[in-house]
Length: 271
Image: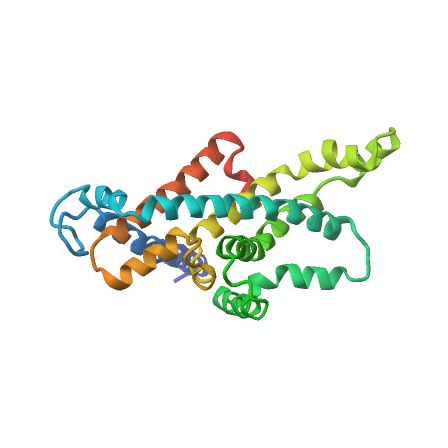
């Protein structure tokens, strides 16, 4: 076999292996989601795959739960509030990290991005113990917002920091040189250039907050809870397919957010 032919065979084998690994990766990631979605349409009284028929029974059943609408609204309010606060904090911190030259820059970066390095369940357990020591564990709604801000700020900082680091600083200098105030420059020059990072960071933060279980389970209580935590509690006492229906609804909400984003600003903001 000539060296050229052997090289072509190796090249084809490499491409086949790459495609196979990609397909297996998609199956591994999307397979469980597909099973949950398909199982949510079963008419049976228990979770089964493949379903014995097609029915929307469990989607109607979900709305009959007294806790569903309240938990859904609570999750939405908490996620929107936490994302808004994270956006403000993230923009300011990212601005300092992208353009600042202060000594504690490395320390600030480490503190802000630490939630990305630690398991969320560890952060939740630690935050719960701090709240108990301060006797604040009863403020469930505020605690949930604070906890979600803690785990979502790093996503906004990373996205906005990357966007600001890639912008041309000479445009800011030109704005200041033409008489604009620092605030006007930040509002009219910096923020528009960093908009893709702000939007992508906000979407990631909202998705993370809306679907979080590991941290929220330590902070929920009688005054406030989230839909994922309430769903986990339902699974503990019931084996019906309603959790699959709820999971499908949450997936649909996430997909709608990304669809709106793709139709408005485009998915290239995540690149």
